[in-house]
Length: 119
Image 1 (cartoon, rainbow, N blue to C red):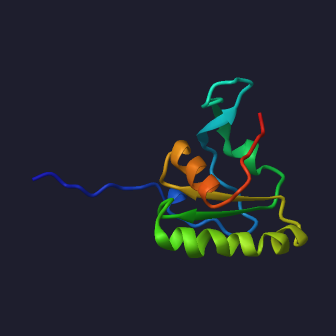
Image 2: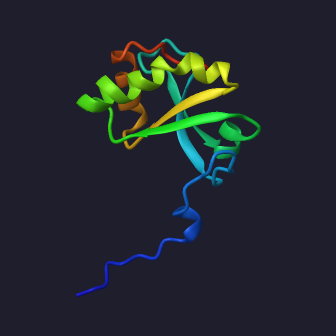
């Protein structure tokens, strides 16, 4: 029987403290492109530096889109205090989940969020 224990580097196990630096990673994102196609998106690599460097950001995570608790409590809770975050000087509020970009887009639309039209 093999040993299933994996040693994870400490830098990946330590929570990020307020004011701390986010690890350098590349996110595979979907961005809008000029197209009449029903799926006007293309893949774009975006780094954590692109998203976080020089900004105050609130990052929250969810176990999964379309789950009852995430849809009725988690996301609406952050939406309810969004203006407070902005007033406190927060530049962006991001939601992270295990779901893919396609599911997150549909879930956001279903939640009544405005679609990100950023090219």
